[in-house]
Image (cartoon, rainbow, N blue to C red; front, side, top):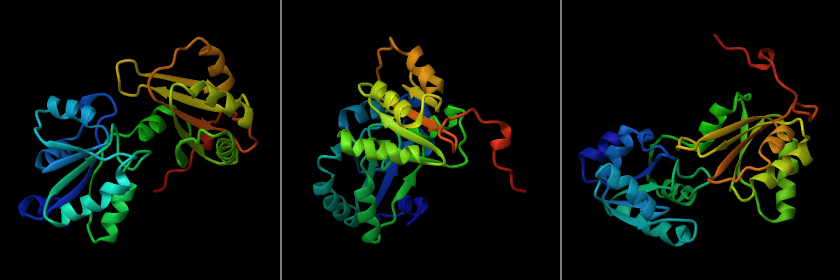
Length: 251
């Protein structure tokens, strides 16, 4: 199934739609069209999605699809698509499936022979990589780290062994703890970029060695979800990189 076909016949579709992470102007024209064509929109937070839809005067029925009900609702959504409904899936913000619900539905759809429409757009992950000013020719995404100390420690050790830039999502309540953990596991000279409130009014980005960022933000009252980009050299020190470290451009 392709995008054009789904609009020209009565066949149902499943569209995974990226939505803004802050600034509503970041939504794409294609996303607005597909949301307008959907019979129903499944949202991680219907209240938040209603604000987005009202802003663009899109009047659609909303139903919930989130981490607490996705196992139960996934078979229902598959049945509804097969019965001809046009269904769009959105998360709170950004792109579904990236540290947000969506994977279970995507997997089930593909297994049932349904080719989802992927409507790309903004993501806190790609925003942070672009804004970090750290090497981005290869990177690893770890999403939200475990809260329990044992599992969290294991993941931090794995990040410390990476030979590439790493990206982590974190809540404002644990971001200072994470900065201290990066310093402990990877060294105070590890270079980081801390992105807060991306694309919003109070967007703020801190770049530098983690020890310096800890000192400069000692009195910071963190609000809004944060993205931490981490880069250290092979020696584990996180020394500054030069243009010579960048990969050669292929012809």
